[in-house]
Every structure is written in structure tokens, then in C-alpha cells.
Image (cartoon, rainbow, N blue to C red; front, side):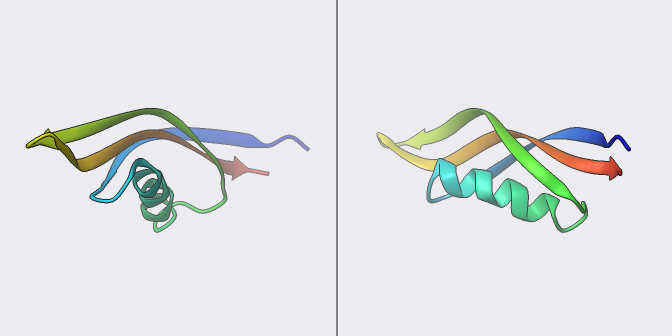
Length: 68
């Protein structure tokens, strides 16, 4: 039997790191989506203030099974 996988795109953020921003994307998505099978980090962005990154953003594609 084949599976059907759906992919959504989300942008999440963190004040600590890009890794935390990506993890937050998965954590937040898993609150409303079941069967998450993977995450693809498409890109990173940061907000800079006074020469320092103060906000990290991760653009992610999250894959999940919708049919087994």
C-alpha cells in the first residue's frame, strides 16, 4: 500500500539560534499535525540590531503522512 505525504511551509523564529527556530517549527506544527516524518530547512534569516542578531528565523518545509 502506498503512502501519501503532504508538505507545508512554515517560518518559525527564536531569540537563541537558527537550530531552535527550526525545532520550534516542528514543535508548533506537531500541535495540530500528526505523523510528521521530516523537516527540510529551506533557508535562514536574521534580524540585526546594533551589530548583533537578535531574532533568528527558519523557513521550513514539514512533511507528514496523510494516508497509509
